[in-house]
Length: 246
Picture 1: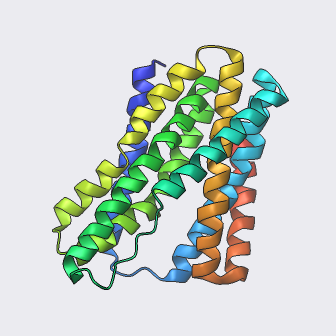
Picture 2 (picture 1 turned 90 degrees about the vertical axis):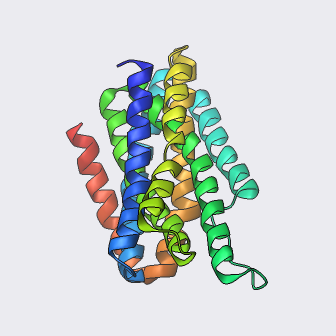
């Protein structure tokens, strides 16, 4: 598979994920927090399985422990820095005009999520260089992870008065940088086995940060501890089954 094809698949995963979130936000006005939290917990469980049964294991197999550790460290560090510069949450300030405040929040969220999608694309590109199956798994998982992010962007834009066509367009565009990241990830990972191992470790570190900083805390906040634990358990079991099939 060429770098261009991998980039196109990464962009498709990003656009479909965030765009679907925008569409869901329009069709389902107010999904239950317990339902949303349980889905986030389930996604966290699946991701944890993929991280430790696929990404980290393959990184070690390709390049050894140090390349894997280097990649994991870089993945977590870069996402931490991104969160400091462009956090996901932008509350509407009391002094803002109501509608302009919501538009501002939605726009900032779209920008922040778009920039977060770039290193997620690198993870997809690295996965495809490792194996088509691994890349496909990552593309599907990250697309699913992007659905609630698309919903987070769409809600304030709707409240700010943007029509539904433009809401879907903005949420879809927030996923587009994933394609650029996937192309670069494929190009970098093809340089040498060490770089491939470090890139797979980077993908694992990036996903681990997402799970620990976003999915699990948001799940506990929305669904409570018991439903969240059940969701994580079910997702982990499905992830084990999923990786064994490949």
